Image (cartoon, rainbow, N blue to C red; front, side, top):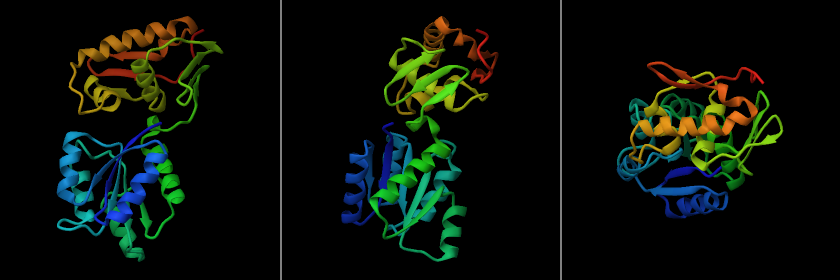
Length: 232
């Protein structure tokens, strides 16, 4: 699935090469040349992943990585460190600063795309194109098709995104605010009760196959997708 990726790289040629390849791979690309510009972009729109160069003018990528991990809003955003520093201690420093992966320059565009996919699969599975099947409920992000016990189910785009997020994070309880951030994006301002409306629509979409029972309301906390088999 398309992801928003922030590229923080001060060398124009490298930044352009990365951005072009990410765009060809179907991603939305944001660009920053230093930590301050990156912070401005992140404040406006939280990216799905950050590619972060170590050697930046002003504050280093290492410093920015630590800031991201100390801020509740950006704590869970995957970060891949890009650097010419290849010593073992440098890699340890990068990972301890909060990077999820560490790529040494020079690197091939294919390697970069593969590393991004691997990190997203691990840290943000709702952004991948993997088909998910839970208890006979099968969701295909590429074809945007949903089947329940081999029966096609009609579902709206927002409900599809909501279900995809639930299915990639089973058994976890999410508040309305968390669902808004994860599904709608933290730069979109809508009422928390909007979530309730879409939960009702999602349950109606799942009723024909009996999978509506997988969407549970947790009183006082929010909602949970349970991976137990459908009662039907």
